[in-house]
Image (cartoon, rainbow, N blue to C red; front, side, top):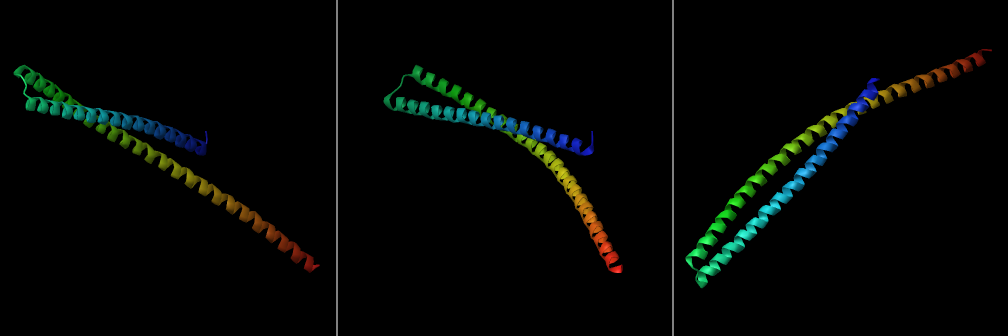
Length: 151
């Protein structure tokens, strides 16, 4: 396998790896949005339930109901704490996945740069070859013209 085709293959593999990392990053971001939405829902529910407790206290509440409200609020607080931890963990996964995508993008950019340099060098060589042929043709024409004047 020649160097240009090896470089093209490496570039294509890097592109595939970058695309795969991008898909993974998109999935992690979607999960982050879902976890954040769940946390927001829990926060709203906890506020609503606390307002119900306040209303019940204004209207008068028996000790058993008060205890039930407090226990349920405590369980909501625990669920909120777990949801915050889950969101923090998901945000870390997003950050790690983003770093991986960035590394894959840098690798791809490096290969693309090498391919561009190789193509530019190939084009320069082709331009030089064409110029040399053109120069040789012009020189030949000039020599023929001089030979025609000499006779």
